[in-house]
Length: 310
Image (cartoon, rainbow, N blue to C red; front, side, top):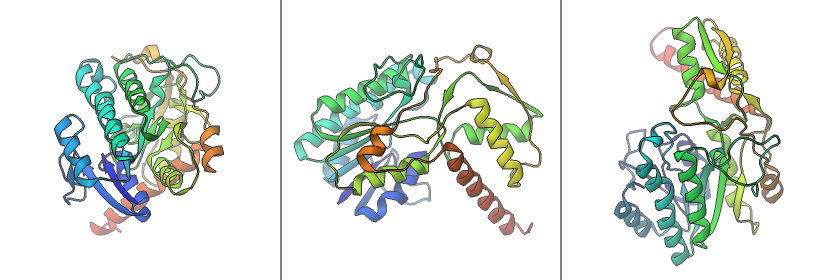
């Protein structure tokens, strides 16, 4: 199997490099043609149609895994054309190419395709109603991929984080070191999901010989609020020695923390379809948090040893 991975430097892309490598010949691509380890790779910028077409034609992969996306939710309100180009029109081009070449596409979408007014976990066939530019662009990309009639897997996920990159967990740890108290929204609910879980589940889905295609929800099990997630981060980071002290954590309402883009209040996704189709076990979100905190603790210990502090 020859795999082209677009967006190899992102949170999910970084983990996919590891997860996909054992499956066959893996070709990585990033926007600037460089990997985070300093190495070079294929140049493929979804904002540039010519760049994308050249990369697709150069590799002629059996499977294209698209982990590239425009994810700046608030900035998208000011850059709707760029968000649409990357999250929507590029997907139409990828889908058309895959339909011509009989390739399979794996694409990642988001809980932001829903309005968050639900009271039970969203299923794949529930009505979509995105609240902002980002969600609309991601939904348009989903529809473009479906309309292309190519063989595809769309994995919707939510509340993604990792030990590296820009994400909620790393922001909370930074604020914990800078402040005595942290205010965190307590009326939005979802399932914090690690990039590693998404990458591992994607690899499992690709190697299992099942005739499944279409849209699947891929998130950790369970649910919580951002406040509950932050509280769990601080507790585990303190125990692991990543934090010297935990800040006072104060629950607030979404209305107390206004943002340019509106967020869904309820982002829990029903993953029954994915588990049934591929036999994939999705552990509780706390398990993933323990793993990421453990990874950060190991990295911290290694850095201290290198600096002669241990």
